[in-house]
Length: 339
Image (spheres, rainbow, N blue to C red):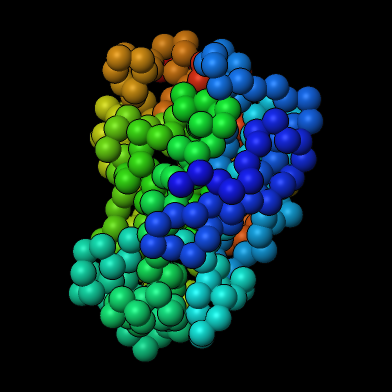
């Protein structure tokens, strides 16, 4: 299951395919800084890896997301942009590419409960028709995207990326997939950062291992509202507060009680960026507490900005990498409140 054309030493944005058993050939783009050097013989020089997952129907790889390329040059890591599938209407349609976030994993009744009947424009993809799993709430293929991402990460590690510094982010449906992968493949990632993406109602996704999370959300979102409930197009989501409270419980944090403001280099501005962290997390090495001076790397952080669904304010990618670096113990985060 190795990529057909992958060389981590290649520079610039390159396009590749990966054969996953039982699926069409999967595609991904990869950016590697021109001055990078890697080796598969010593962990000291393995390159950090960041994966970005696009939203439903988004342009791929996407102009906003590719701001990570700039950061990759500055910080010496590889960026990979996996592509979802869009087998719809008897053909492959890029305007329908999406991620399978496990809609049918718990049966048709649970799937049908994620939207209001008659108020949506659900889409049954060809692979779901073939599998006999079509819901009025459907909005992705029925191919196993977890298997795709798992195989892709493993293949990239064999070619020079660092398993200890592998990070995952994505926006909208890609952010939903981040939550899903955090539960299914939490052992493969060092930290995750979903952007205006939350689980569907009844699909609250919690990591099976201790995994730091940065959740970024716009304040005026009516497509995936941060407060949860029904979206403008009739789907129903878990609230950000519910999801992160559960995530905090898994990490020994207090989400709901006296969260503390976290200072970032991009606070305020036109979008009024503000971030908060949970208290008392015990997700440090060996389960050690992350209170005190190093709590800057708190593993449960939420950030809000003024905007609507799909907005990508300047420096969001910087904020995400800043959080990932902090989790690796190299970040310069600081808090406005002593924990």
